[in-house]
Length: 132
Image (cartoon, rainbow, N blue to C red; front, side):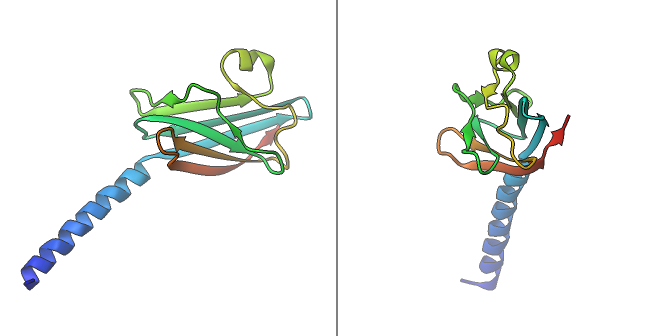
């Protein structure tokens, strides 16, 4: 392979790698949470820059992970998905995934967004929860 061909191949590989990295960095996740003593736990997991169908998982150790309820969500026209986890019966009736009032421990929650088709992780974030 000539030097010119090697250089062209290297530039092509760099271009493809940069494009792949841009796809990864285009998606982001935010996690917000709050507790109200032992009477309520509330968590929101939001993803942006996504295309396809996804589900969310929350974890507040030592509790077990909780997966968002079915059906999985398809990113909207703004490439966003939003998931709510709550212990309030009214919010659960409105579509939030049920968690216990004491689910959040040590004011810490981890949130994850995964693609439905293959479980690929698109985002993970740790949040410190506010107490009200």
